[in-house]
Length: 393
Picture 1 (tube, helix red, strand yellow):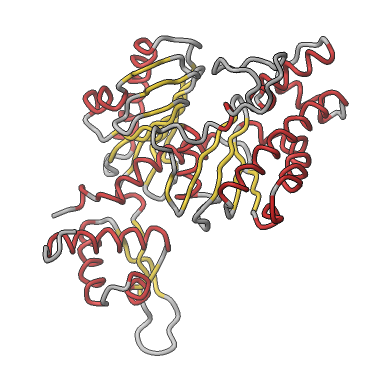
Picture 2: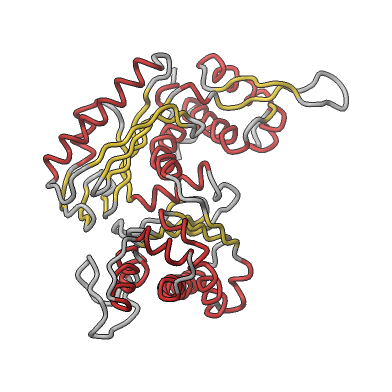
């Protein structure tokens, strides 16, 4: 540590105060000093600097037992915005999002499936340009600070897409290409990890230090938050729960990763529609399968129940390993939670040691692309709050 360096200490204090205001919400200078452990004079001087820079604002007063009522401080959400972008095989989602996680404007673009990286990225760059143009035209006084991008796959710490079974790409230097093209900081992460980061920043995970985010839908993925930080593993491959083998039956279905018997071949959308077809001879879409379950079709109900059984059993292993405070379930298929959740909860509780499942808060989110976009944007917002380079004097 650089002891004795006044500038460095001021920078640390700045970051501490800024992040405390972000996490606590509206807070007085006195409470800020109490929470951070800094002196009131240090908090006051630093906050005045932030107010001058426009990054925080005074937002009103609270009741006082005597003397002048304290003034509350909070982040100025419109001090800046970031782009949140999600790359999928069949479409792109994007939005400009302020520092409070509020969507300013958003757009989407359909994509042809199985495109090679170059034609896909050319269209992706056009899409980004269109959002930037709209933002600068409609909100010229809100600067764009950077962009966060989420996609399925394994991404290195320097923003190279190492491997993606979703897009079918390997070794694509996304960050370097996009930073050169747009002259903005670019932060790239696995999409389920961005889901977990977003829930920690803006959503159901704000009150927890250690929790798991399970994504259900086209694939089955996991985001892991431990002691308030994303855990992505030594080789950026943590959380691939969908590709955990749960059976060695030689007749088990083959997964997109190439192995047989993965969790995902029993719990994904494709797995469930294939299971219904195998049982009835009828080809259905996932939406049709949900409609059949809603109409009490016995085979459809069994398909969803089976998926719930496998998900609950897999989650019980994770609870035994990580002992989380909460499990948050999101993704497109939470719109069918009523059909798989009972079996999930049953097998979660049956297979956890020490009745740990009873201590874990289980939250099921409503399906929403907004949650994913906020999660992706949280990548860039998190980096902003950790560096604050824009606001240094």
